Image 1: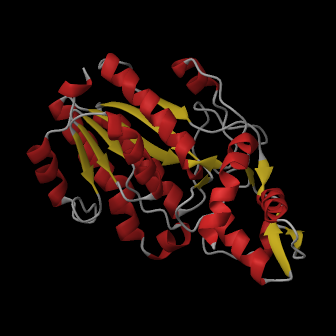
Image 2 (image 1 turned 90 degrees about the horizontal axis):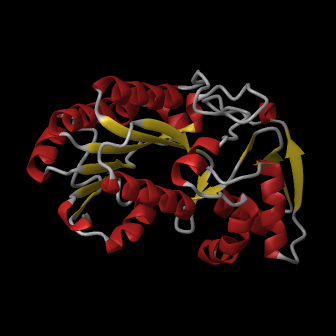
Amino acid sequence: MEKKVKILLTGSEGNLGFSIKDKLKNFKNIILANKKKLNFNNLNSINNFLNKNKPDIIINTAAYTNVDGAEKNKNICYKVNALAPKKIADWSYKNNSYLIHFSTDYVFDGKKKTPWNEKDKPKPLNFYGKSKYDGEKFIINSKCKFILLRVAWLYSDRKNNFPQKIIKKILEEDKIYVIKDQIGTPNHVEFISEITIKVLKKIIKNFDIKSNIFHVSLKGQTSYYNWAKKIKIKLKNNNCKILPVSHKKFKTIAKRPLNSIFSCNSLEKFLKIKIPNWEKVFKKKANIIIKNSN
């Protein structure tokens, strides 16, 4: 079956796309599209690219993810996160293609005290969140076949994510302040990409599988402050002091949700899996992250 299905991966050089690309090696008929091949800033080029390649399944990881930058570059952000997915979804509907699209915890305001589930009403705090939420709505309204995967607190081995930034600060400074009241679940992109492949295989097996939204996350929760302390333990023999501070002390252009914890019960039922705790995954990845930070 996999030989007959043509799969397009957008954003193939981004953190998430790069990881998914690695997992797609065992599949046939893969089309990889980075920014040079498919630039979401040029909306007119999207239909031409899709008509030329005619994918059966589209995995869209391309996104404008600079949260503070989105407040200054609203036009570009909205094109990439909302209007481009609309183009893809409209094309998918007309051509009977299946769309796997990624969204974010930033569609929520973070004010809920318990984990967010798929039935909770989005209410973005910033323009980045609004652009991603509008992208979701465009996809749903297009009536194309879709699986929408919301993800949060992503990190990887290969780019400048939160762990790498903290490692650099710990090694260079005597004292650092880290936010204590923003909570979430650190999710390595490899876990997200593994889930994506499981979803992909279900679609290939049954192309008429019902459209749905799923929250994708490891289990457990932490704050940026507590995560930073765990990173410091992995570094060993370091005298840098890590001090907790309220988010109010960190002035950023865009507001961030305080609670980004996802409930993944729906995903576990859908895939018939048991999701592990984030600390278990982080322990496996910590040494690689530290090595790549040098």
